Amino acid sequence: CHFAYFMEYGLRAKPRQPAAFDAPQVGTFLHYLLEHVTADVLKRGGFAQVEETELRELTTYYIRRYMEQELRNFQGRGARFKYLFARLRNTAWAVVEQVAEEMRHSDFVPLEFELSFGDGGTLPAVVVSEPDAQLRIGGKVDRVDGWVKDGKLYLRVVDYKSGRKSFDLAAVRMGLDIQMLLYLFALQKEGAQHFGHEIEPAGVLYLPARDEILSAERNIPPEKLRREREKQLRRSGLLLSDPEVLQAMEHESLQEPHFLPVRVGKDGSISGSIASAARLGKLGRYVDKLVRQIGREVRQGNIDADPCCHSEEDSYCQYCDWAPACHFQDGRDGDHLRYILPVKPEEFWDELEREDEEGGDK
Ligand code: SF4
Image (cartoon, rainbow, N blue to C red):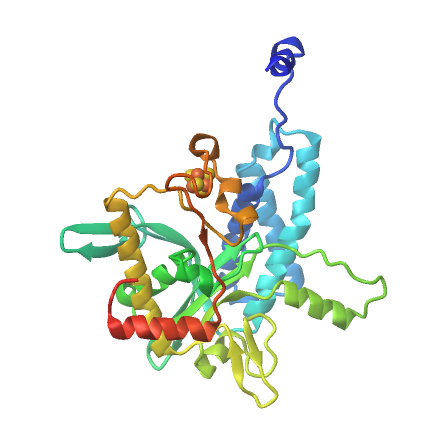
């Protein structure tokens, strides 16, 4: 390209570098903050014991530490980067405050941060054994919260999400987003020694690690504004439907839940993203089956270009680094899109029920 040559050798222009944190950098920063602030708060007796001003001081301290140690006091960074980082501080405060607010209303306590599985990790890799092979899965969960009742430790796995991703059974059905479930069930099987209790899975939660800027009328009543914010920042996930456990997760969950993905009917019935212990058990076997199937396909040498998507315009190809090498074209040779079809929760559980009875592979 003549113009490219002119830009590079004539003008000696430099490619444009993003001035801001990119999404993964923002994620790393918020993870760092949540981990350190929460760990310190727990040492001071938990969020209920820490005043708002103290929490702010703590957050400011760790923001400064991150700036000094991880960003080397902005060495080599321009004014715009500093400005954008200063703005990110407001998001950071908002995120810490909403986590604190949730934890003040909960008996669940963070037990682990960045809990790692696999080589060099806190816990061994998740192992799936086949007669002629073994699949070992390593990775990390952002946070593990627990609550003890009758000698059993109820665990939930928490994942911080800076984007808008939410837990979706339709994706799970396709073998996507199953990591948190995989680790939850691995903790149930293998975590008793580490945690010193028999373990009951209490669910998985995606926690929005972002601040939400709302569009609203200038004179919106504060209560309405609060409700709108709450709606945007509600967690998604799948939780054990046991009322006692839900109440321990959020004290008001059986009357007026603010954080958990559950709803309370006029008759007091609980619905939403919940599942009985029996269904969670079936889901555990289903996830195990999915992982075996994925492992088998990899071993058989399946390298098809077959990305999952909700629509043609919304496939992973848009973000994939390998797009220039793969030249994906739906329908050409073996290339094909796999559509994530919506599924109602009851349909999903019925399907799981049938699979479980058949005991066969997906
Ligand atoms: S660009 Fe190619 S490799 Fe990347 S997701 Fe799409 S099909 Fe797969």
